[in-house]
Length: 263
Length: 181
Image (cartoon, rainbow over all chains, first blue to last red; front, side):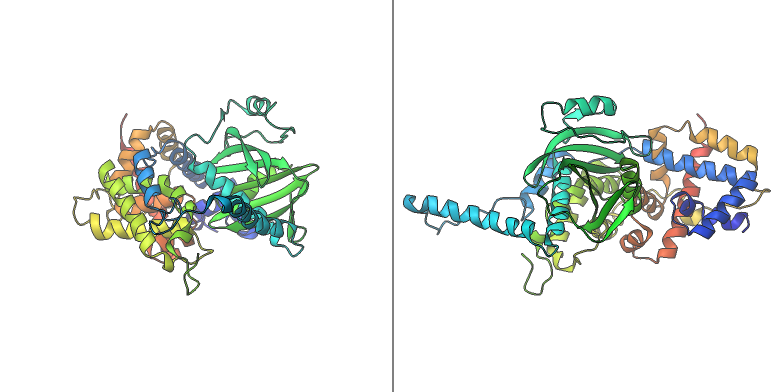
C-alpha cells in the first residue's frame, strides 16, 4: 500500500469504514510515513473544523409554523359542517369507546407474546425523540457537565437515572429534560454528534415488552438494535432501569456511544 | 393511512418529516445564499414531498429523500435564475498530488496550523465559493448521510460521491489555507 492508496482511504479509515486488514495496513503505513501521518492530521482537523464551526441556519420559527399548518398529520382536521354534534347523553359512552380504542391496541401490543412489543418500544423511542427535536425548548437543564445534569433530576423522578458516561468531545452532553416513555416518566439526556442530536431515555424497566432475541453484546450489556423511519434505536436494560438511545446518526456512531454508556 | 396501493399517503410521511426542517433549511441557505430564497425552497420542498408521498419507500431514509427533493427543486427552479457562485468549482480544481515531493511535512504543518485558526465566517465564505455540487456533498456528509444516501440525493454512483467528497474537501482546504489572516 503506497501513499496514494492511503490518501484515497483516509476518510474511510478515520470513520472506521475500512475492513480489519485494510485498516491495519493503512494504520501501519501512517505509523511509518511522516507525510501521510501529517495528511491524516490535516484531514482530521478539517473534519473537526467543519463539525464545530460551520455556521448553521436552522429554519425560522415562522417557517416551521407555516409548514406545520400545512402538514396533513400535524394539524387537526377541520370539523365537518354537515356533522351534527353528539347528543349529550351519548357523550360518556363515546368518550369511553374512544379511550378503549386508544388503549386496547397499545395494551395488546405491549402484552403480545409474539414480538410485537419490541416494535412498540422502538416506535415509542422514535416518537419521543422526534417530539424532543420538534420542541421549541427541548432541554430543561443545559449541561454544565454530568454532575450538574444528574442532580437536576432529584425530586422530579422516583428513580435515580444513573448513567456511566457524561459526555466527551465526540459526544458532548447538551443537557437533560423530564419526558415520558410509554406510560412512565423518563430522564432524557441529550448528546451531540457532529450536527446530530442523540436522545437517551432512562426509565424504570419493569412491565415493558423487552426483546429477548436478536440481542448483541455492547459493552457490558445485551443490546437490541433496530431502525425505524430513518432513525437508529438501541434498547437495553440494566437492573431496574431501561435505556433507549435514538438518533438519525449512523448506526456505528450510535453503537459507539452505547459502548461508552454501557461500559 | 396508507393509500389503496399500500404506498404511503401524504399524512403517513409523519411528523418526523417536519423534524428535518432545520437540516433542510440549512442546506437551502447554503445553496441559495439568502434567507428569503432558502425559506421558499424549503416550503416548495415540503409541498413537493406531500404531492409525491406515494413515491417514498417506507423503511428508506426519509431525510435523504427530502434532501433529494430539495436539491432537485433548487436545480429546476433556482439555479438557473441566479448568478450561482462557482469560483473554485470542482472542475477548476486540480486533484491533489500525492507523495513526498508534493506534500512536504513543513507545508502540511503550516496548513494544520492555519486550519486550527479558521473562524466560522471563513468556513462559510469558502463553502460559498465552492461549486454547488462540491458544497452540497460536503454539507450532506456533514449531516451524517452515508455515501449511498448522498448518491441517492445527488443522483450519481456511490463511487462518484467518494471522489467528489475527496476533491471538494481538497478544494475547501486550499481556499482556507490560502487566505491570510
